[in-house]
Image 1 (cartoon, one colour):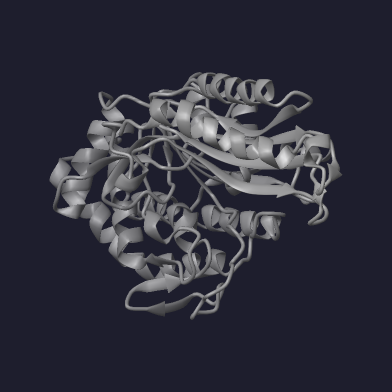
Image 2: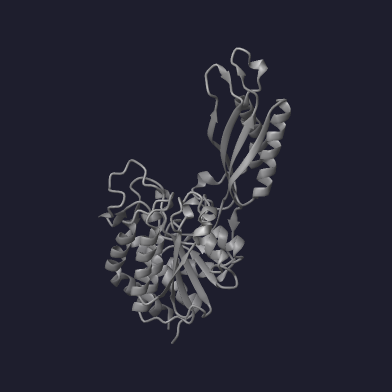
Length: 425
């Protein structure tokens, strides 16, 4: 089939499916899948699975065993963790392309002028929590498969679409578990596209690393009128912040040349986020806890970051005899970066220009996403991030997904799948 004919058939099919796209989007956007703890996961997965079945995909559900819920979803209150996978074509046929998105959303928060799950439509935007981040990506990847079928385009390989939980809390029970079970590995998968909300006109090739940690400081409690009799744990925290400014900040001050967006995130940041100490105004605190969020550009590794913070703590400990500390690492993910020199990248760039009418831009995500599991643990290099949601709206009040952008993303996904897998004549 000539490229021009393929482009037109996909374009026409997606346009004809606009009504069903909106109906499907509103159905899943209206399901409150807040994480934590993970409400309505089974209901949302089933709604997505039903849509896959409607268009003729073979569907399976992958559920985390109950005995592993505390391990993989510690904030999940024992609620089920369900992923849904649909296959268009023989599930064992190769090559294949696997599109995946997460259906869990952050809590709605305050400040909304639209009902958070009301799916009100205004100026072509559907307002709902999690609409952009990132149920819109799930909508586009399924409508892309629907459009291929509607247009009568039979792929030589298999189009796979999945929706997973728990990305907003780290993804261990979602894509992390799916990688463990062999769904996203270099042995099982040829291409992977994570449909996260990095903007319809951008192609994402990686994300910054994350290190979350809590430092528990111990000193010696004493009366406020005799501070020399104690060891002030809060003073340890104060000195530690100063050492971080003096010793670590100069090491991370350089701006990365990589296209991390927004540009304000092109500097590695080490941010204190919580502190607790003291019981009474006239008592020197004998304990203190201070938490940090460290975002690492791809030039840095988690192991290096740990060495720096442990050295800083040791330096303060030597300044304050009688003090001690312990570090609890609560989340750690190295930065992820894939090559621009891959056929999947070239294909999405060309097809983005086809339907957008302009060149797509490269981007690197400021926050972590499920690409880390596929690339680092699944060892699958041909994994990009592309989806229609707008990064600037993620986790904010009055979040929305734009209908035209979901359609455009679906067209780019469908055409890219057809060209990467090939089309039966």
